[in-house]
Amino acid sequence: MPVIMASIFSALIILMTVSFMIKVLLLGYKRKEISFRQFLLYVSACVGAGAVFATSLPFVYTKLFHWVLGA
Image (cartoon, rainbow, N blue to C red; front, side):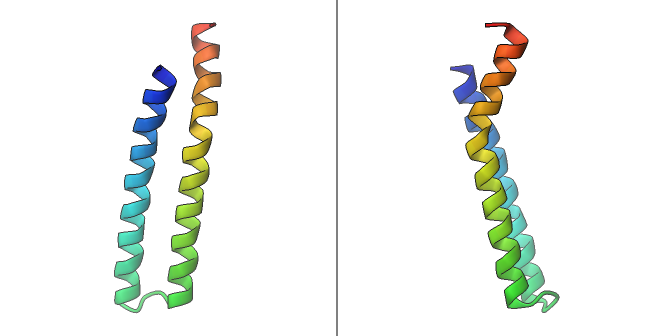
C-alpha cells in the first residue's frame, strides 16, 4: 500500500512538472524563440521522460522500501 501511494503522489508531481514545461515551451514558441520542430522535439522529450520516470517509480519504491524496512 505505501508503494502505491508514494507512486501516485510522485506521478502527480511528475505530471504537473511536465505540464508546466509544456506551457513554458508553448510560450517560447509563441514568442518565436524556438521553432516548431524544436517545440515538438522538446515536448515529446518531456512527455517521454516523464512517462519513463512515472512507470519506473513503483519498482524503485518497492526496492527502496524493502531496503529501508528490511521486509
